Length: 242
Image (cartoon, rainbow, N blue to C red):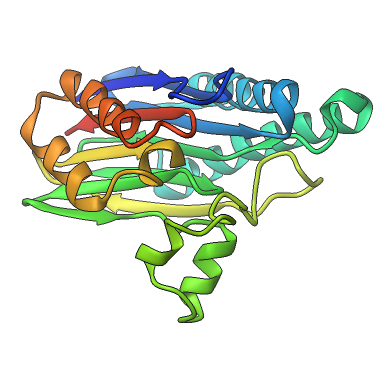
């Protein structure tokens, strides 16, 4: 298993409120996390950094060999719930952090399956047998409009409200987490990213870059592509090759 990650401030923002973490844990189990903070400069930084620290710590301390599917699901939920509790409590106690929150996309990867916990609009894609798929479903205002048939995915990328999310870690005392199990084959590649990439680059362009470069180069190439299109947001990319 190979894992590479990179984050970039982009071409417009003065700070980078994204955060990511990658690691290979016991017996070749991969771990990846991507967060996109929100709630002002200080709040966004604090929320994404706290989620990164807490979720990673809980997964590292608790991961064991031969965990069942249910045990891995429970681990993902516990880690995200604890991050939510901490961030929400901090936002209630510190007026400078009121309203802060973050997306969270967490993956625990074994050779045959990726176990995913997902909140917000950071995305997971899979490249399998030459086909590129969006695995996660955005928790966002425009996704709700897409689901109702009122707009197309292409139209969603151009809307001014495309960055409004309907779920985030830390904005309320409870959080609803999507859990996904993704079957993997040898040679599959996974792409985790914030909307600084997916909001600017098409699926076709991301697929072409993901399939045509070593993963150590893919992160640079994807970030460069988003910056060529304006780099209006922070850009974070993690790539995993099974």
